Image 1 (cartoon, rainbow, N blue to C red):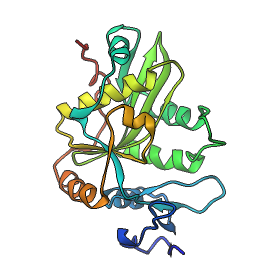
Image 2 (cartoon, helix red, strand yellow):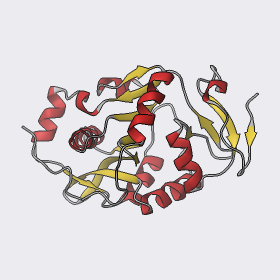
Image 3 (tube, rainbow, N blue to C red):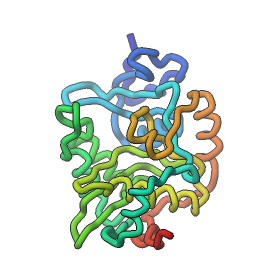
Length: 235
């Protein structure tokens, strides 16, 4: 059994998270900006399907990506150099999160990015905490990702692609932008082969939390990222 929390209850200690399913900590509460900011700074994130209560997770080990260790394959480097894509930051957050919710994914029926979740992260975007990285082709949004920046820590949430390499191009630009801005870690939450191919790796939750606490404590001004902040050419 996992504890049920209401809007007034704090999160339980991470050590109480289940081993199976990995990281399930508690249920309940709400998706207010205050609750979400508190959760992420404690290494907790919401993940649930439509019709379920809000479920909160903190898996062990944790999948992370260090910005300077992003892996660029030869085919991805060709895409980055091709000039086919234009990458922008924070220019159309609603379209990115909506596409992440709507794009079909192999082995998944429906989406965890419910209307309620989209509204919650839109509120965080308005606070300058949530951000999008967008890949455009001939004026059309064809890929991208979104996540949260707190201190010098970035929390990746979801990505989508409608053409080959579109999400990887967005991720490469994000990693370079974050490295230039002094961000130390990207939370990838769960282990997937796709994330591993980009250089992500698993670390123990205890190590993750030590690094997270140090990074979220570093000064970083919330606000809209410059649209052209990731526009440098690739060599």
